[in-house]
Image (cartoon, rainbow, N blue to C red):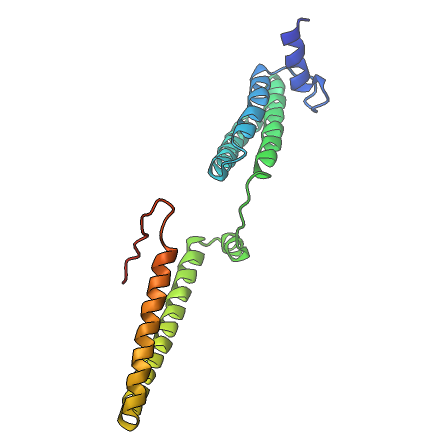
Length: 199
């Protein structure tokens, strides 16, 4: 047995992988190429997610092949059945390794919706509607405070016109100073200024 044959035998079951000693060169190729793919994409979360998605799709394909093999099982299809089971186990192991590099948190509400047979997009729609409602409440409060401030200034101006004028001057100079500081902080290292568009 030369070195390539022993490598195939080891990767397909001779090394204690639980594959009953069935040599499958395709598995050996995928096993040797997978670690390289995983180590290259360890820094990119989007690539990690794509790797997991590809592994899930491959697992679904293997499950379909396994279903076809089992549904038409006879004595002659025992070897392909074992090969497909081994492929499924190795792909599930690969999926588990890839998923460890993916840091995704799914809200429990989404899982509950899926368990109930509903569309998980309903969760997103509910969250957005809730945010819109809270935004409207906050906007109403802000508008009420602005109206109160305007009304108080009008009343104070009638009672204390000199003090209100002094207050407005102090307020204008304070606003100009804050604007100057904000512009000074927004200067980029190359000398350019960040431009913030006002709504």
